[in-house]
Amino acid sequence: MAYLESRKNIAGSACGLVGLVLTFTGVAGPYWLVVVAGLYGAGALIAPPERPAPPDFPDPSAQLDELRGDFEKLRGYLTDIELSVTAAARLRELTELLAALLDRGWVAELLAHDPEGVHVLSRIVRRDLPEAVDSFVRTRWWTRMAPGTESPELHLERQLGLLKKDAERLAAGLREVEARRQESHTRYLEDRGGTGGISA
Picture 1 (cartoon, rainbow, N blue to C red):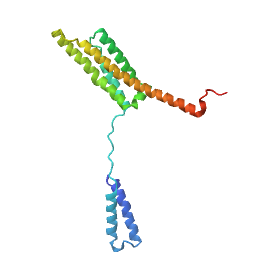
Picture 2 (tube, helix red, strand yellow):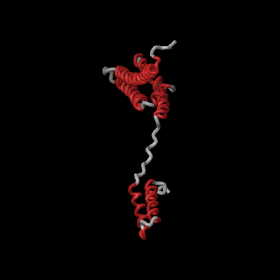
Picture 3 (cartoon, rainbow, N blue to C red):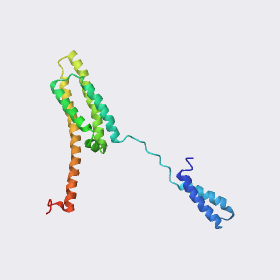
């Protein structure tokens, strides 16, 4: 059934019809069957191959929905971690920024057109931040067993600061998109003749 609807069969049938026309006009002569079969075969050979359908990957909007769920799980995990005052403050700043970026609404609409931005958020939420906190917890335990080494809190604070910079760069990029959109609208209004403001 699939072959009947294929491009090869359609092209071959079209060429076969040409062979039938040649037969009825007397051009093919007694070899009409060979002519029709040959033209059908030629049409099937020159037809473009079937193009398989591309895989159906989730779009960025669907990925953001999943990421929001993972972020909520991460926040639940983070509430159980005992941190220094400085690390807790940096973690709070980072999670607040991530929550704002993952908020539904116009920010999500912007991110839906920015797969790289979704990837950055996904990397922070699903890998970098959990790894930073988990390695801090494990290292802190060993530090208590063998004091005198560099404080794991300092590493965590630096890591949280770096992750916040990543999130801030993403936010700045989204802001730049909106700024360009605003500037474009201003130019449109100016080109339309509204440069001088409201005319009398």
